[in-house]
Length: 293
Image 1 (cartoon, rainbow, N blue to C red):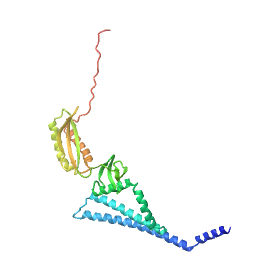
Image 2: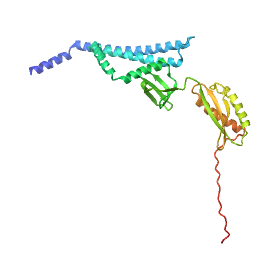
Image 3: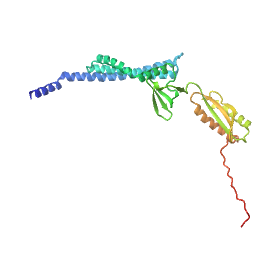
C-alpha cells in the first residue's frame, strides 16, 4: 500500500512540476519555430533559385537552354527541400534529447549494410544524374519511354514523371529508362497522302495544290517552310495518291496535319476535283424464261 501511495505521490509531483511544463513548452515552441523557419527557408530558397535562372535567361550569353534550366530548377528545388527536411528532423530529435550523433553513427553502419541490397536505388540515382548531365531530355519535352508517351513534368535523381496526353501521371524509376525518344529537340514532319479520282486531271490537281501550299506559311506560323508536293505516291484501287510533306516547329505536326487536311479538302471542292469514296454496285440476276406454262 505504501508503494502505491509513493508511486501516486511521485506521479503527482511530476505532473505538477513547473519545470517540466516549462521545458515542454519551450521544446514545443522551439519545434514550431523550427518548422515555420524551415517552411520560410524552402519558400525563399525556391524563389531565389527561380530568380537566379530568370536572370540567366535575360543574360546576353545564355550557355544553358531554357529546357535544361527548367529541369535544373526542379532538381535544385527538390535538393533544397530534402536538405532542409533532414536538418529539421535532426534538430527536432536533439530537442527531444535523443542522441543524434549516436543515431548518425548507427545509421552509417546500417546504411552500409543496406547499400548492398539497394543496388536498384543506386542505379536510379546514377542514371538520373547522367540523364541531367547529358541533357537527354528536359522538363517540358515530349518523349516516349518504353510504353509511356507524354510530357516530362519533373526529373529527379531517382524518378522521372511523365504526364500522358489523357492526363495520367506516370512515375518511372530512372534505372528502368533504357531507350528514350525525344520529339522536342528538332523540327517535326507531317506526311499527308491525298487521294483523287482516276478521272481527275493530275497536272491540274498538282497546280491547284501547289498554289495552296505556297500560301500556307503566311497563314500558319508553325510551318518552317512551304509544304512540298512530292507527286504521285501510289495507285490505289480507286484513287491516285499524291503525297505532301510539311516541316513544322517541334510538336506542331499534329495540329498542322489537321489544318492541312481541311485546307486541301476545301480547295479541292472549290475546283471540282473529286475525292474518291467507296462505291457499291449491285447486279440483279434474272432467270431465263423457258416458255413453258
